Length: 149
Image 1 (tube, helix red, strand yellow):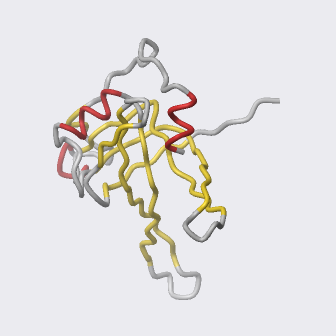
Image 2 (cartoon, rainbow, N blue to C red):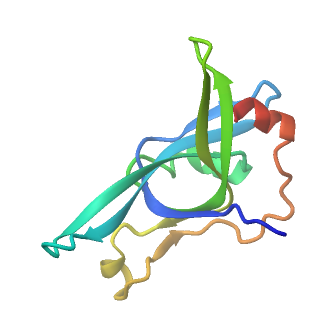
């Protein structure tokens, strides 16, 4: 039986991305992202925005390049697509620590921050679109990814 590990997020960067290099010399980028959802109180019918925060990382050279050239900055409104990856390590107290992150490996699209003003409908307007096909890009070696995650 097949399973699915797919994440799609639309939200804002919570901090400037950080470009790092693995011990094997492979560049990658990390950033934080916030998404919101609206909930309605059953009693008062009042709408409330709830924020969720996500840690993201990518080994894709074109995403690293976007970060290196400051196209990705705190506050930018983006669409990302990838998968969840949980890594573990021992902290300074010797306790095993876990962290689940979104590994962005498929898409990153920069969106207009105010979709209603951009094109007259509710669909976000794209101001920068990433390449559509990634089949010719090699995946990060498993051992490099294991060092990060």
